[in-house]
Length: 557
Image 1 (cartoon, rainbow, N blue to C red):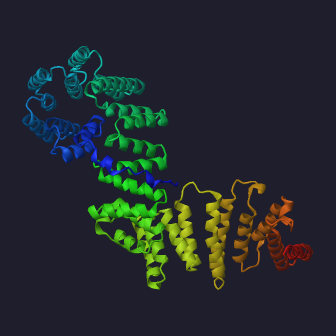
Image 2: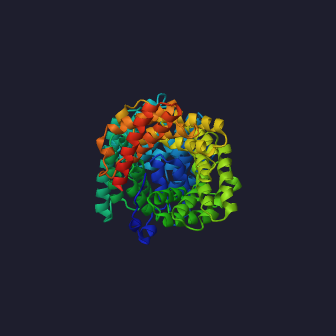
């Protein structure tokens, strides 16, 4: 599948300067992407302008979600130290204590958080979430009491309430209801943000997590609508790394490769992007035939992370596709790196082998086979590798070995179509032709080739079979019998004539796609067959037809 990329849509450095810092980490936590949240919160928590207490709280909650309780506790304690008046870290400490069944201590911390929260109803919702995570059944009354209180204090307008309710519904598998709750969160977040913005003369800031969770729930039902919601989010909050990345991912998941590449290009300019996403961007550039650009991105990644396997792979493919002279050296470095051993796929071996084969140096070309054999040993019974080995032997005119590996390829392939058998049989035709000094072996390969052609034509009516298929079967059988048709191949030549006769245009010299040469082949071989069995009447008839079609062939020139 090909991707088309427009590199002109990369954003300017102005975007880079306006990233959200630690707030991106909070957004990732709220969207349920905890490892990403940890990365960004750790990266930004000591920056000027970061609310240290909040950063530590969401860092702790991210660790808690990943069952890293010791790190979570340390983060919450650091948050309390940074600002003892911030209520959230007491919620975090209470959540830790709930996990260790210290319910009394947990309730003390929750009370402290509530006392400090004043009108902040999100604290109440987070306490409810702590109870829910501990045991939604045991603490059902506590949860409902807190949510009721949050609704009353916020006059049902706190988006956190609806995000929490959406999460509960999603966990229960009620995805339609979850989507409705997330939509309510989006609505109230926008209303609240607009009112606040009017007071402060600033742009509204909304709840990105509600948009992302809504889009994720809705994606399987209507991908385009899910994408539209993330686009809406990005319009409202254009510097959000979460929004930029989610839009790129939604495009990617839905097969909108061009847009995915464009959006990844935008996201790459955000300082809060993730290094692993750079490799994804390189893949999209490569798939969009932007080979030099993909190579540039890969080289940049490898300069910072020489052990990045994906970047190494895409670099080789990009340079190879661009016919860059440095491709072979890049492939050699990639394929011989000790730390990469055991991670290669069949295409890694075949790409390296093809680069070696393209060399003008005979010794370098000879290495190509060994690379494929090494791949075959590492990944046995892999059709891509056995097929490449077959192609190698065919190119160097070792047709019997080409046929041997073609047989292995067929045996290990799934969902074969007639053309696969047709192409494989060519190797057996070559093998039978090359073994003229060993008639028994030639016959053996020919018989195998005939069986393969029978598979190619299996289940097809005569008019559905391409004439080339019947001709190949007849040729293989004839060559395997020392160039004299036996009874089986004679029947194939007759069948070819029957197939040709179904379409009069195939015998029309004025038709540039005629198959008069096939008639000549068929009657010439049938004449030899009838001569070999002393059938004079049939021999005479075959020679007459042969003469007629040779005349037509001359007239067509």
